[in-house]
Image 1 (cartoon, each protein chain N blue to C red):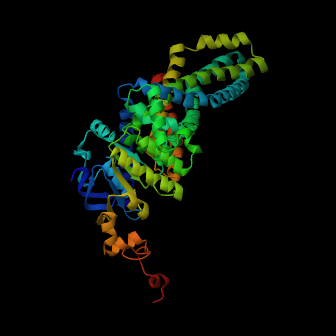
Image 2: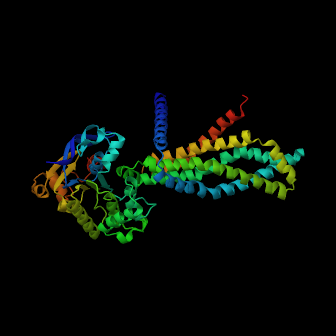
Image 3: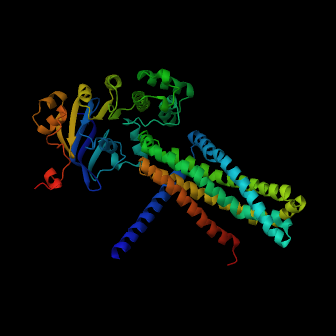
Length: 264
Length: 260
């Protein structure tokens, strides 16, 4: 298969905590791949490893056939121009308007004149349905609108790959539906490679071509949404069905209640 | 006892590590090809934020400090019958010490704390991280213009401070307490040496501007990205800047006065 991202034998630790323990991922070109798992399972960390913001202790991360962690600073920045990242909280620059936020990467990396930049920015904002909000400041936007502006900014330079960090978290049903539609449309029309990191099972499954399920530093399940739904693994079942107790225990590990209350 | 020595050693190592890291950040921020297309606009914005917006506090403080100096100086000089030396006393105190030092302390409290909090908040809201992912170096786009603006603003603010403080002293000494205006200005002109007093004061303010802004931007860039982390970084920024300014003032004065 033609992969845009290939991750091999990845081990990443923070202090003494193992986030990833010898894991492999293949992100196919032009497809939507969802990385799902419980909170704190390292989903955002994985995106930072792919973007070269974090360095693994062992293993390789290749993006577009280049080892991200072996590149010089200039080469890494060139590679990042092929990537877009939609941050969990939008990460809009709060001191400039919606228009300037979307224009920021275009002004930084191109020599286009202001008239051309204006047209491009308005087209990107039109795509996310916020052309008429271009003069607003980020503080005047709702959470859903902020994320859509951030999406317009992430696609401003038409990247080959877009990574979405928890795009559906904290969204009302309408905003969530809008984001699902936009991600799908973007993938279909531009044939971008998309990586969605999420724990919203229904939304991510509805658009993903392939899903990786991660927990406790390992890949505990992978396959198409249909394949994962048929799996008998208790770990996968607990996550997909949202069961409160199972292989991931309800109680934080430690002493038993009896021990703590000295009942024995 | 051994544990205490170990902890002391650990703190020493931490200090060396963070000093080295802050030096690297500074070098990576400022040593590079100038980018006139984006850099100039950012610099002008920051000159406004750090320089122009600090003007009010600098001017008001300068006026009062000059007035107090005029009052205290007059009371002391009157005992010796030398009130005509008031202009000289005020000008030398302000140009050599109070101008650069008080301006740097006010600058650290007003602009330095704002810089730390702003950069820290940008880090906490992932704006710096986002810039990196857009292949834009935040050291270049965020840190460098703020650093240069502080470095340029400080001497200008210190000069304005000195001019207004001297005028404050004149108001009290000449207009209120009746010192002869001619004696006030001519004594000042006769005793203040441009190179030794004024230029040395400006050199001091350049050094203080460099240090106070470096500390402020580094504390913001290196803070723990939480509300508590930003609050601690802002406090550290003001405390470290103030102590560094006072310590450096002693070293610079010793070097400039010489004769030891």
